[in-house]
Figure 1 (cartoon, rainbow, N blue to C red):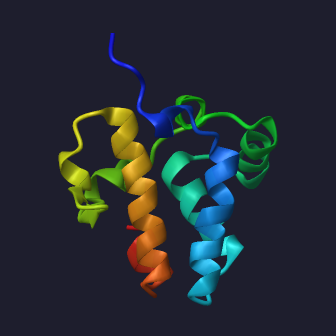
Figure 2: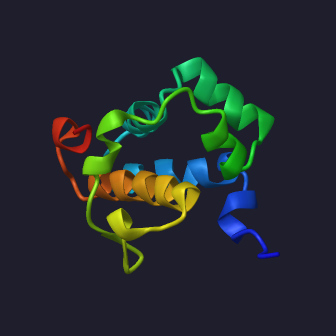
Length: 116
C-alpha cells in the first residue's frame, strides 16, 4: 500500500496562515485569499472558518468541499516545478490548483483574472 503524501495528512489550518502571509507580503489581503479558496472549493466564509477550526487535513478539506469550481480545469501553469494540469492524483491536483491561485495573487495578478 502506498503511503499517503505528507500534504494530504497536513492540516489545512496549518497551511492557511502561510497562504495569507504569502499574499500579505505582496500587499494582498486575507480577504482575497479567502475569496480564492471559496471560489475554488465552494465553501462560504463560515464553512471555511469551520474547516480551519476543526483542523481537518487537506484530504478532508477537499472531500467536504461543497463543489470544486467548474472552471478549475482552466488553471494552468507550473507550481514547484510541476505542471498543475498534468498532476495525475485528483487530490494533489486540487492542492496544486490552490497553490497556483495563491501564487498568482502574490504575483499581483488581478482578482478577475485569477477567478477565471
